[in-house]
Every structure is written in structure tokens, then in C-alpha cells.
Figure (cartoon, rainbow, N blue to C red):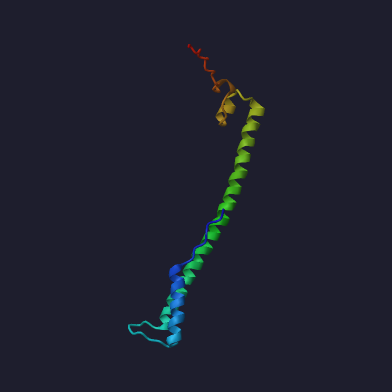
Length: 120
């Protein structure tokens, strides 16, 4: 499942605000270095960071998919190795236990519970 990409309400609000400010004057200068150009540059910088973030999420999704595929392949190979050891040495051998298997003689067997008689 892919990660949801992120939007920005702040970025949307800033874009609407700059459009409104441009309708006042395209060269509006509010003093203290606050101009349409500096505001637009800040919006662009934030957009770039948001795009980089969402792009990183896509890369993580791709990497996660390849990792899961590698894990599945390794799991199948691990199972195949254990089955091969069992075929060569037997399921009750020391080698099978050393490879990570559980000897047949050491397996837990389910115990049946004795039936209790109901006395009325």
C-alpha cells in the first residue's frame, strides 16, 4: 500500500493570497522587505520542498516493494534449505536441529483433556 502524498493548506492559502495581492498591484511593496517577489519566492521554495517530500515518499514505496520481494524470495530459499537438510539427514537428526528445525522426537504433542463427568 502506498503512502498518502501530502498537500498543504498553508501553501494553498498563500497562493490564493498572492493572487489577491497581485490584483491590488503587481509591484506591491509592504515595507520591511515584504514584496510580491519575496512572497512568491517563499511560496516557490515551499512548493519545491513539498514536491521533494512527496517524491521521497514514492521512492520509499518503491524501495519497500523491492525489500518485500527480496524477503519473500529469501523466505522461500530458507524453507528450501531446511527441507533439503531434512531430506539429506532426516527430520530427527542433529544436523536438522542445527539448521533450525525441530526434531520429530522433540515436538510437543497435544494432550487430550480427560472428559469430566457431569453429576446431577
